[in-house]
Length: 189
Image (cartoon, rainbow, N blue to C red):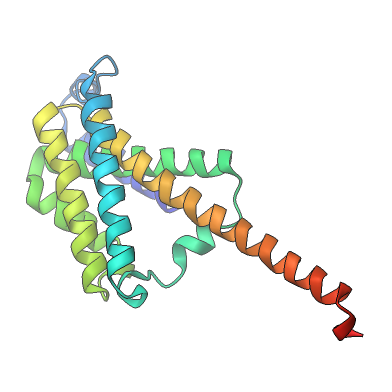
């Protein structure tokens, strides 16, 4: 639902900021190989950095209050792929395609971070989401192609959403295994 609002906001802002629909279409170039080189490379760097943060910092500093777990833990992989594609498209269209194009990289990045309001009370998450937003914005600045940051955004979100899903499945299987062992155990009789 939120992503549909973001798409609507992007469309409305786009009508205001862009003189012609063709100007919006110029932001997208599927034939640009930098989609792969920059988009995938930056996604891998962000994922590795995020994993390092999870390893080196206490979990309370990067815990989002369980919102991402609620969103992704019980969804199928195709549904996760669909949602993360929608999220990447909607957010990149609004924040890079419309806002950054017209109000600048820093302002768009800060608005992006602020809209992830659940991170505002967690300094580490806020810094991370602001840095990632800035990095996605830089990729757009360098390439002029929304597919590049959208690809990176999609990969980052999809990897972490799938990780949440797999952890949920693994935890459920572990719990089932423990329960079945307890039922079979003579000590439980």
